[in-house]
Image 1: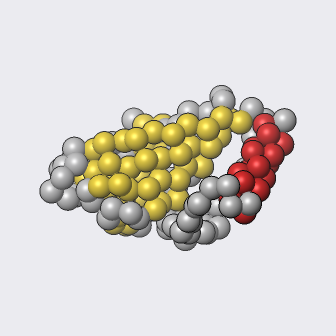
Image 2 (image 1 turned 90 degrees about the horizontal axis):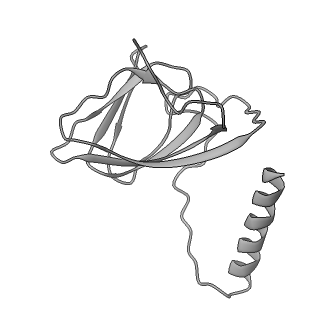
Amino acid sequence: MMKKYIQYLFLAVCVLISSGAYAANSETVIHTDSHWNQQPIKPIHIDHPQVTILRITIPAGEKLSMHKHPILNIGYLTKGELTVRSENGDVLVLKPGDPIVELVDIWHYGESTGTEDAEIVVTYVGDKADSLSIAKE
């Protein structure tokens, strides 16, 4: 039911934009079928869909603990610099405006490596029963 609702909502927005009712511009920030480490995104089956959007601020010089995500999440760095390192040695450095398709079920951590706090807006898509993140003990 939720999927149908989202499809109808998207169609309505497209009709409004194409009709000239609203002036809109779009720029593709990322269009991919893989995570930032080039591993393919696995098919997702969700019984009870839930979307969460977080604005996360990581103070300059701060290193997050090792963690993993059981669900798909996509982010966009709005300020600062963020370096993400996976347990198997992959490294990604993000600057303001850079997107990230985060790793799923792979241990990793982020570190604010710039001179100012790093701020990232992250959208998580999963089942209501899923956690957003799991810390490594």
